[in-house]
Every structure is written in C-alpha cells, then in structure tokens.
Image (cartoon, rainbow, N blue to C red; front, side):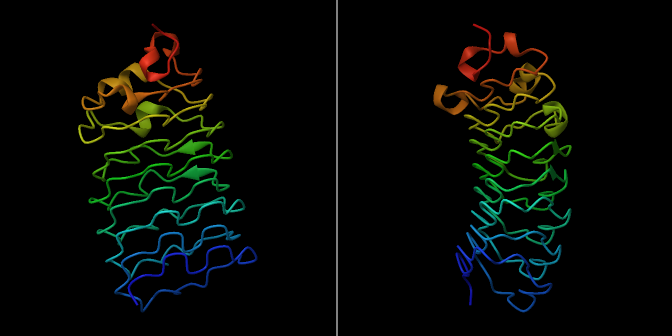
Length: 220
C-alpha cells in the first residue's frame, strides 16, 4: 500500500488516531485528505515518523474544527514531503510551532495551509525557513486572531524561492510587524496576480498605510 489518500475522509465521528497507526506503512507516498472532514481532537506526534517517503500531505486535516494543537515534531522525518496544500484548512488550531516544517527541505507548496483557522493566535518564528517554499497563496487567509509578528515568522534576510503570496494574510487584522520589511525579503514576487491582496485589511501592521495597494495595503 503506497497511497492512503482520503482513506478516512468524512468519518465525522472519528475523534482519535491510535498511536503507531502507520508504523509499518513505510512505503506510503501520499496521505492527502486522509483525515479531512473528521473530528480529530489530538494528533500523535509519531504518526508519520516511519513514513519517510510521503510526498503529499494535502488536505490532511481539513475542517477538523476541534483540532487545536499541532505536535512540534509531526513532520520531522518526512524529508520527501513536497506539498502541504490546505493541510490544516479551517481547523481549530490555536498555535503553530516554528519548527513544524524544519526538515521538509523539498516542500514547495503551502497554498491555504492554515486558511480560515480563525482560532489561530500564534505562529512560531522561522516557520518556512527549512523548506523550499514557492507558494504561500492564501496561506493564512482570514486567520483573524493571529497576533504574531510577520518579521519573526519570516526571519531570514531573503526568501528568493517564494513567488506567490496572493491573499496570504488577507483579513489578518491583528498581524503585527512591518509589511514593507516582509516585501523586501521577496525579490521574486513580481507579478500583480502573485501579490494581489496579500495584506488586505491587515490593519495592525505598523506600516499598513504605506504598503502599496498592489499588495493589498492602504498606500498608493
């Protein structure tokens, strides 16, 4: 068995994942959507620890609305992961460990990874530093309670691999820090569609009114 995508999808009464569930599934390549639309409350930290070949974690826990915590080392051994699109979309997650993706060196796409997580308050420092991120499209869209500093989340001098941020922080009204400093770290986000509404209504940024409208800010 190499693919378990959507295996438990829509099991709305599923609240618990047994520890070691995939311990012997060492040939797994994809688990996209495996627990989407369930009611998982806690994630065993070692659930994917022996599954080092998994490439696709898309839609992993989508709309598990009572899921509030993510273990720090959840993806530590998944060095072949390439995609986390909508992995935690509209969950009840309240904080994201800064080292969550630290060993996912091949991961490029994080579209909607935490979209509509309306209970999310804290995002750890350097979240994407260990990755090969190219797309952050809608990554934190409508995360209305995030109060973290964007310049701590993205604390490297430059992120030249990223080329899409459209709607990434749309309606993150409590997000702190300097949007202009963040923009300066993204030399390859150039197309109008790639930056569109990145900061729409991110009004707590220290320089929101200086951020160009092309990026969704309040400036000219």
